[in-house]
Amino acid sequence: MRAVEPTSEAGWTGATDRNLELWVDNLSTTTVLELDGQVAGFVMWRAEPAGAALVITIQVLPAFRRRGLVRPRLHGLRLGAAPTR
Image (cartoon, rainbow, N blue to C red):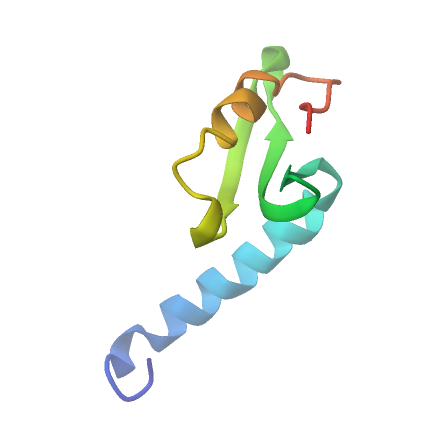
């Protein structure tokens, strides 16, 4: 970043700090995606007002993409309930 866009370095650093804080604060609502006993990725979310959920990030390893692993977990997100594995 410093070599390519030096004027943007402060913004990138600030975003990294905010994202790290967001991840730490919401680690307890991270759901690991598994397929045949192998970790395939994860969904991190947080509870919002009125029982809604805000998805912070979804990560699926390349070998497991396009298999429909995430959609059922997203439908299971609601306040007070962990999505199914």
